[in-house]
Image 1 (cartoon, rainbow, N blue to C red):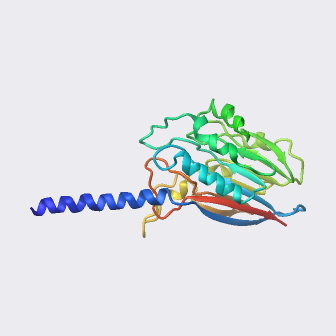
Image 2: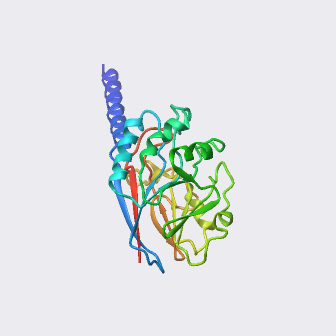
Image 3: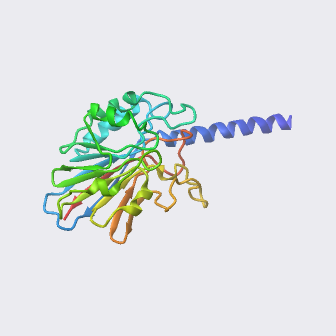
Length: 265
């Protein structure tokens, strides 16, 4: 009898914990704001919204949840939207299945004065991503750059499944023009030159699980760029904890987030 009661208690405890972890994963993303002063900036303040690691797909990122996130982003009235990869799949239970069109279709409703700019993540198929994303009014940046209002936006290919080339992405940019770099894996920041005003990355999910006392066991970064603002030798990197999950649809101690960056003098 005691064994049966112990088993029941264990099952109940696991169920309660799993429910809590799933609830954390599907919580309303918090808005995380950063103010970044740019040397030589002469334009009015400019607002960038970064979305990362959406991982569209069941059970934690259904279309309805992603559509609600899109509504929330539009309500922020961004000047520019930066998408830093991993648009669908990524969980053990979905085996990365699913159509990329289905995963990014809700993003077609995103609105920003200077446009929506995207790079590829390690869960995004190398052949189809450059074809599909532009269908939904996104400017896909694969080792190249484009001018957007007072900024130049550069983006590189995914480091795990592609061939990132920072030099190619920056080649030909007018001297003195503010540059924002987009990448998926934050460790690529090690190769970003000082002329880049700010780098935006994702991939880590902020660790996805942060344990009391022990911290984040799995970070997906060799250089320690887990989440937040990093300043290295005057160069600046922001790593988002992202919106979705990979592996298991759980989070602990690391909420989903929408990053809002205000650039100013």
